[in-house]
Amino acid sequence: MRKIVIGGGASGLMAAYSAASCGHQVLLLEKNNKLGKKIYITGKGRCNLTNDCPPDEFLSNVVHGEKFLRGAIYRFPPSGMMSLLERCGLPLKTERGNRVFPVSDHASDVTKTLERACRSLGVEIGTEREVTSLLIESGRVRGVIADGEELEADCVIVATGGRSYPSTGSTGDGYRFASEAGHTVTACVPSLVGIACKGEFSAVQGISVKNAVLTAACRGKTVFSELGEFLFTHYGVSGPLVLSLSARINRLPLSEVTLSVDFKPALDASALDRRLVRDLAERSNEQMKNVMRGLLPSGLGTLVLQAAHIPPQKQANAVTKEERVRLAASLKGFVLRPASLRGFEEAVVTSGGVSLREVDPKTMQSLLVKGLYFCGEVLDVDAYTGGFNLQIAFSTGFVAGIGDDSAD
Image (cartoon, rainbow, N blue to C red; front, side, top):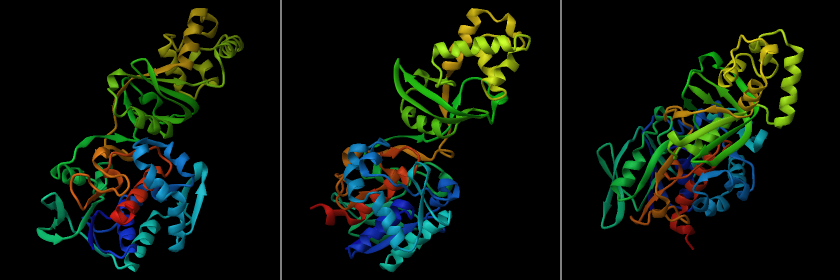
């Protein structure tokens, strides 16, 4: 059986490898001049390729598509991916949060290893070969058109990625292919990305906040609340905690979402009030902007004082009880109002994609067009950071490559 894989990223390389492992003739087409262009920039160039955790724990980190992915993750879990790469000669290491990297710390080694594995099984690889459309007749795919040439195939696997980091070639081609084949494509939005907030943040740009609780509420319901680290930027907030948060609110109306920060999660209201009383007494002749330096990173204190409607120049001994109560409230619930998510050019992944209702989770085959398969970011699946999204690409690519061979 002849299979064509469109896209030479993580899911495409894995699909090509697993298809060839089953004895199929495989042609991998990549429009860029090299494979795995997006892999090269993951993990800050080190490639956090998976997360070394059991399937159930893995699935708890999936934001959209957990039920759909269950079979694929159990069929080809993180341990399977790690074993494959190490068998193919790539030593791995596990770091904080079970994040897995190549020992070399070079993302390029992941791509080279997968490419070498594909070629060893006879996969034909064509770079700078852009697919412009699918060939579909009577409800079945029969090939693709690439660079104006009709290429016949029994199966076509769409592994074109999403829309994040479009400079790597992820420009949404797969969504167009899916739509033209009759598939529903869920609206695509950036995920794992910074959040622009209303207000002025230039004075606190670059300040990192550690051990804070960031909470998001929509229409009175809490949709996210976690302890972690984030960063103030010129446009609002970013950093690990914010990236995770973005995955939870990117499909909600941001005008109805409110973010709040608890800068002192280790102190309850009573303990914080005692701390404020002590600090105000010990530094009674100092201005409040200076007193705040004992509570928050330099510069951030002034922002919190403004939220509490306390002049930064006010002396500590002149602060009223009402002002102290407001200050405590601001420290425990500093409000941020999101204006927009940052764009796809900064997003780690795309949220949205080919509707999971129209794809068989056992094979990744289209339920509308026989012989047509989807895998990776083009599907409406996404997860938190930590190697989960790349493993989703590997697992769905593995299943798509095998296809009907695994249906039994």
